[in-house]
Amino acid sequence: MTSGATSELILIRHAPAITDGRLAGRRDVPAELGDGPAVKRLRAAFDSIDHVVTSPALRCRQTAAALFPDRALSEDTRLWEQDFGRQEGCKFEDLPDLGELSRTELAEVAPPDGESFAMMVARVAPALQELTGRAMDDGPIAVVAHAGTVRAGLALALGDVSAALAFEIEPLSVTRLRSLPGALSVMSVNVLP
Image (tube, rainbow, N blue to C red; front, side, top):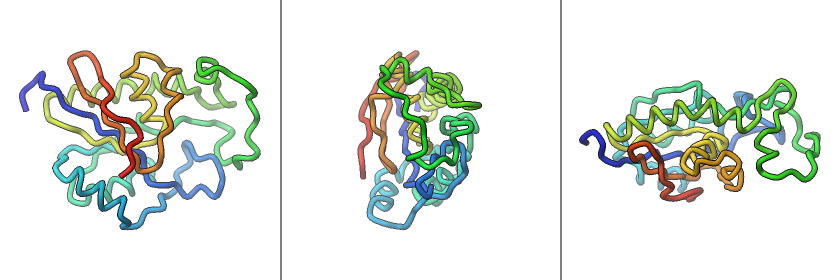
């Protein structure tokens, strides 16, 4: 593919995580991953993708290995999910009620010793921007990561961090972003196989 040609970032959220009902942003938990129909459909749909990058999280590496069994996988630590600090591992029902917040306010909330969504986007953005450049030169790149990472990609494409919080990102869903010179455009969001 020639330099400057448009291409894609294919953002795939990992398979369902085995969390035992607890928050697992940075906790390294496994994926609930079999060789079911969804995995087979995704594997077939992206059979021609040569470049695959994952978050180092076990659930992402397991998902990437199942979807791209014959490909070399590279890891990028910047693609980790949001760091929920002292709330990591808390039961969902024990998490504090933040009350009514606008998306703009919510994007700025950081748990104790953790990071806000806006901070996470700032951390993830350079990795996604680098991958965008590579996709323009080398063709489509699959990124197997987290819901927050996918939303960070949407934030970049939209130019609005808080707007990305409006999107639901299901396990094993696909979000496609087209790489353009100096920009990303949204092709599809949260498509399930």
